[in-house]
Amino acid sequence: LTIEGNAGPHAGSGMRGGRLEITGNASDHLGAPLAGELAGMNGGVLIVRGKAGAFAADRMRRGLIAVLKGAGDNAGSRMIAGTLVVAGDAGEMPGYLMRRGSILLDRAPKSLSPSFVECGAPESVFAAVIDRHLIAEGILKRPLLGNAPQKYGGDNAVLGMGEVLFPR
Image 1: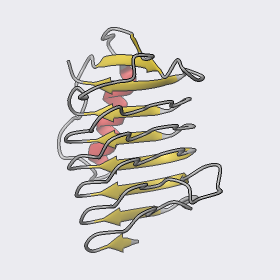
Image 2 (image 1 turned 90 degrees about the horizontal axis):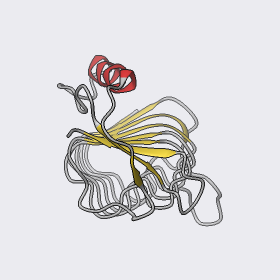
Image 3 (image 1 turned 90 degrees about the vertical axis):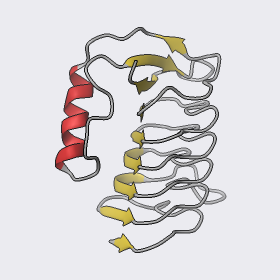
Image 4 (image 1 turned 120 degrees about the horizontal axis):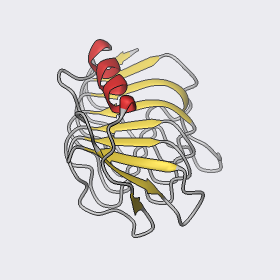
């Protein structure tokens, strides 16, 4: 499904599979749960060719969300699992209180929660595989992470099995 133009709040919230592409911007709570729900997006691929508002991928359970022109504050907050890709500015505190999952950024974030732990920049097969996948799917035109991205693990204020990766 392709939305030509912008999408409102909670776009992709109930996704369980498939592919949703938004050619414009997405409002707040992209792929996040509606009030009273425990989890947001539960599978599939959601691509935003523009910007996303605050709390993109909040409480996302699985799937892939790619935002190509930046996301607002708290992107990937409270993530349960899944993958969030942000090309462009990621706002303040990406991954705040995330339990598991991966947040892939094309630059260092403005700030991370102090309960994230720096894990260095090991050579990563995952980085090469995800870069290839994003290019093959037509989501990105060039590699996002490169050979040995900087890695932070967390958020250790909760389960702490998530990761935030970005080029050094």
